[in-house]
Image (cartoon, rainbow, N blue to C red; front, side, top):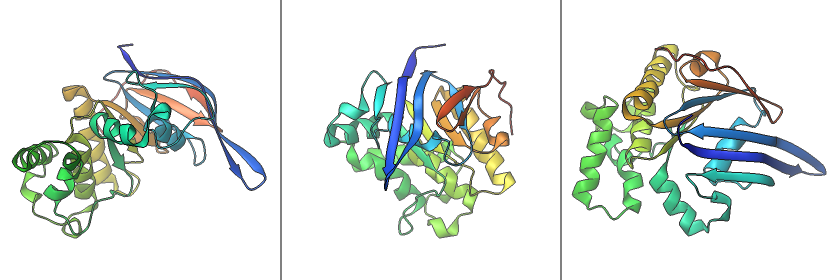
Length: 234
């Protein structure tokens, strides 16, 4: 494995619901190397999205140790965490999460508004990201004028625009038809192979998981790592 940029040791996350304690992750060990494309697969409630939230610093582990790019997100202040997250992580969501009153270009530019880049440089970078996902001819379109697959590609461009170290994708094909899903998965593969982006993708779909280079199956908060798989175009 190349340099590990995500390292979890005995990672546990518990929630309390009423009088019941629910274990979302139980004593998990994980190492993700720079440049890997890892699929986290499992049924609803298996803990896969919880893991993404811990890596992103959106939640804190109950026990165990988690290092992301040599840092401990759980130990950061809110201000430091926001800056670190914006600089190092890119997010792709199942529901796209685009702002309906902003154009595709303006949506992609949003993360850059937390940086010190000039307006012209922000626009230039956003245009480059849209071109990379094949939507440079849709930059003035609003989300309602785009197909679901195009909306998700805008979401990927937004995740890429800060040139993050890690892309976290939570069910990125969950709301797409088969053709659009294949386009998005091929794009993620390209970002991984051609640009060396490290990708952690949560999915419940075996076909989507097959796009990754490594598959880890989760069941009731525990990891069952499958043998390495050969990624293929989908």
